[in-house]
Length: 247
Image 1 (cartoon, rainbow, N blue to C red):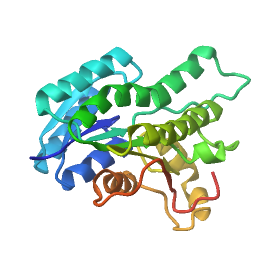
Image 2: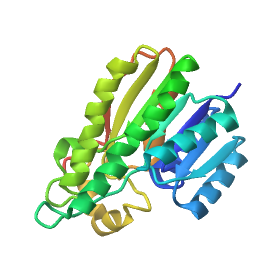
Image 3: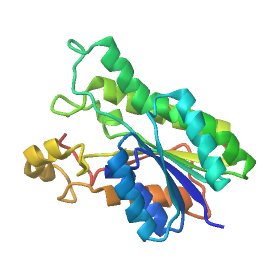
């Protein structure tokens, strides 16, 4: 029987890269996103690769809706083997200009969403004999975003929170569920194109591998953490940035 992965923010960008890598590894996919046209296109692409794909329109910050989505996934597939918490949003506002509403929204979409989906999915994963969780943090969780970063302190705080959550839940959910975080550097996506187009050549000079990352790069690491056997990796955060020292 094919395994099932939930990918939040899976309609485009890094999420689509993760979903594609998992499909190529033989998994079926449940995509959670708010971008209906993009979800439909990605669903068709993944189905063409031989996967069964279901889509769920949802704001990932909504706790109750997360429960409905997980219930829908269980009704459709009867199992949850992998959860990829990929959905997120940037925030370029600094401490002196950010509003409380903007700060709360950044934390809700990037950090609370991970809690929402882990809380609802983990009982099914435990009952099914275990699984893997991969949550998308960021290089900014380590660097603080520096002054030129497209997203500043609120985003860095949320992404650092994912690392703390991952470490704590590795102890709480082990040995049945392995949970890890990934910290991408600059990745070429629809969301990040404004940064990569404007500063691409400059950024590449500060990356040891001489190029920007792609959703496929991140997808392959997610796929490894989600499927490798035997597995002795949990509670970790993996930087994937081509060794980047300019942000």
